[in-house]
Length: 228
Image (cartoon, rainbow, N blue to C red; front, side):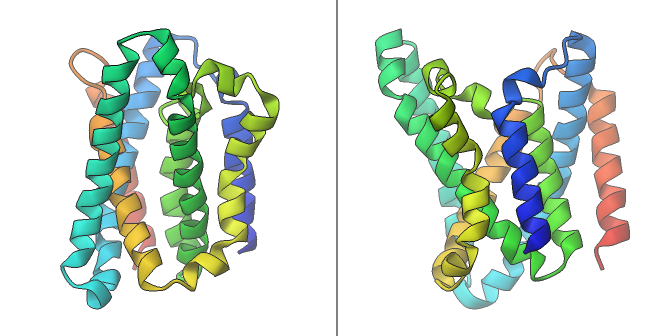
């Protein structure tokens, strides 16, 4: 649990100072996003999905329903927000609580999952952690995506940043829920896959396919060499 807590603290620091972590060169920013996208997609398919087999023994096919539910929830929420954000800044301001609340809950569960994976080995936990750290650092899932009035408030920004730490600290309580935690874990996997495929992979002319492939190859080799 010690390493999980250290990881959570590092992630909190990255989120709190996310607006200062910026690759100004557009070309290298595109390359960084593409490389990390390759890492995230590879991890989702080669490591996260296989993790569901253990839960499959308990929940059978229901586990896949929770994965779809997580994927669908993120998609529907995102579409709802985008449609309303187009209608004006006032509504965007009123929806900031939804976005920040989703951010808090997501990373709270991430903290608990870090502890759960640490029980299986630090390698598994680290392989899960690195893509999350990467896409937080490059600004895809970070506090920069929260309404500006939220991130300008230091207390609220701090509270959102430490959500993963809170998740680590209350992980024992969450893990005791058994099947409920397995269901939540599956939902997070679905959300993770959505972010990896829909929000993260650069589209159309954006990004650099060579660096995307480099990310895929790099993490494929890493998973192959480290995971038994």
